[in-house]
Image (cartoon, rainbow, N blue to C red; front, side, top):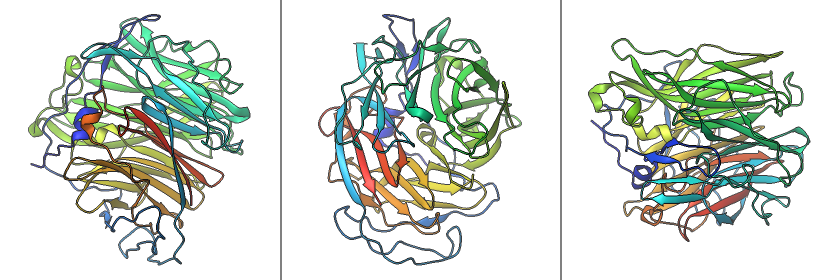
Length: 481
């Protein structure tokens, strides 16, 4: 049995179970660290092809980068592109906070928004958050004062955001409802000065979940250009969380659908979390999520997946979503890849390239893995360190992968790798900065964040992450390949 213990993820795995009430509301949180894991299956794509491994030596961001690594077993033909100079990297401190998420306005250069949590602790394991949005109009160099889409009310701790056409900024988070928390969405058309009355979904009953993901269809030739999609979880029955998706063309009128879910024989229960959703250029959207098939599971202890003999398989599924007229529908999910430890559930990233092909970044073992869903997978690591929490962004032929790595002393650093040839080859891992921190400095529920991500805008990568080197801080790396 392979048991992975990462100090950063041990804290992260204490994901809060939230019961909220609107207004001045207290969110009561209970947490459980995911326990033992089953024997390690191979990381496999749908076609059953073996993963290609790339473990080059880290290169400081300030030094010239050698030629990208290539492998005859990597996806696509073997190639050794001409060496490129190191990207220009700026790391910018944004604010104090945790669980940041970033979005870059695809139609207005330099306009970037970050949403973060601002924890209000009322007891050792109880509290809530006042989600704050900060907007930069100069590519992250300076940031406006925080604004509060939910008017500073105490809400859930997993806010997300996405830009749409005409600089419409959507934000989503869970708010208090009957029986727990339910999904809520608001939007601003004036760079955060004013916000719409939040839409509170009426489709599913409240629970401790939601943990949402959000995307806007910003493909100009898409038949659903401008539509916003939200994926979130809830509890339809005692066999495990469901995968709900809702969509709107105007932010006011919403359609909703549920994914048809599966289970393994003799493993009737399923734990699902880590939903991600991305719009595709053909007008559809793709949703992905972590799923473990379990012999037993309890809604009273949602994070506990049990010992190895309780788990039939664990990994990721994906499904296509269709928005036609006022009707939203979803195809049956299909298995994408297996992983070998339960902590992999906390951070994955989904991206769709210009050809409409989907890519997924996940954790597996002590590495992060990236794969196109119809092809092979490539794994990344930093020698002597444990790699985790991948972030992914794609623009044209350029693929950006960011992640964190923990050394033997427990110090956390942030790395990235870039492909300039649509994933055929990647540059060696490079440090974003010299900053390092110890997870003992992050004494907060969920550690520094579960919503980290990256976004492209006009050839520039904006990569946001939590960091505890100087308190609970939010940093953005602005990377120009």
